[in-house]
Length: 414
Image 1 (cartoon, rainbow, N blue to C red):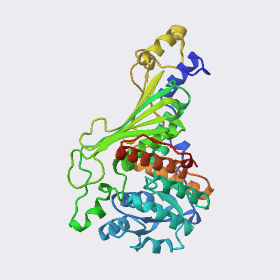
Image 2 (image 1 turned 90 degrees about the horizontal axis):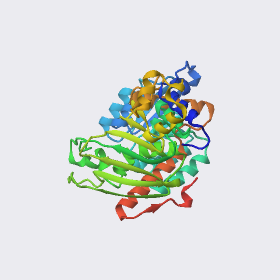
Image 3 (image 1 turned 120 degrees about the vertical axis):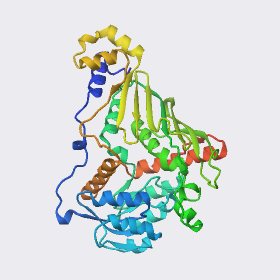
Image 4 (image 1 turned 45 degrees about the horizontal axis):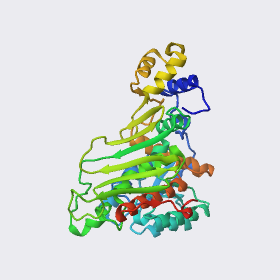
């Protein structure tokens, strides 16, 4: 238990934290009426599956209009335009889109290897930027892009939407307030039972449509899936890892892909905290989940958008607290929660007005971006955490490829 709080305070904090707080979208960017002059005009670069989906969300977000789309694959471009503003301009060359002086900002939703140069070009064009994760393909580009953003006047958001989910913010507060005691271990899963392939109408489009399968274009599972969890853990701990190692391989889908179909990595953070990041494509058990394990309690998060989160008190901690205080004397705990807490059973962590799904969480992220552009401030997910996660992913990939332990280098820190 943290030395700076009493056992009574610990019990009350845990009880209040798990009883359902009034933290919701009111604490974040909210819908508000915008004048015509407040409307942000955005161009989307890359309108594949995710890009077309986010085009629709942007277009449905108050104060934002998508007035241009760019993609080199005609079916994708058509899908993007279908969700954009009526009469939106179409491009097949992103540099031409950047020449459109009516655009305030761009969403870069292309394969990972293109992010770096496109972001630099967008900065040079004076655009605000939303950049899909992972921010860059390697650590060097992440550091370089971070410096370029800080030398510009552009707002730069990296599309890790979970930092705009009220429940994740409440979990972060609980952990930082000491409700779990000292965090010692973290386990993260991002598991699926699927090939992760897109159908290809013609073999010549294989690399274009299945770019996640090829190391030239993507960091694979670490970059596309595990990076979400790395971002959350770094954010909750307010730290970056000192060491990274792991194993990965192509052990099931021998179909010509170059990126692993399973990855298992261990990150060591300051203070000896160890986090395991796993992603497999052959079994969906535990799905998308994070487990924070502390000396006084555990927090589990299930499902992609944190719709299920629970607190488990450590039996030893409960026994000692109840011996010292007496459970009936703790009036902050409801009768049902008191009994469950005393038995170390799962207690749901709830917030008022949570984001219900990926659509709402992504929309909250875009509202945050719009607010930051209007008020010249940094988004919740910005170039700093985007840089750090890209470096972490690169360290993990290097460790798995070389059978090594990679260490955080001084030049990585911004």
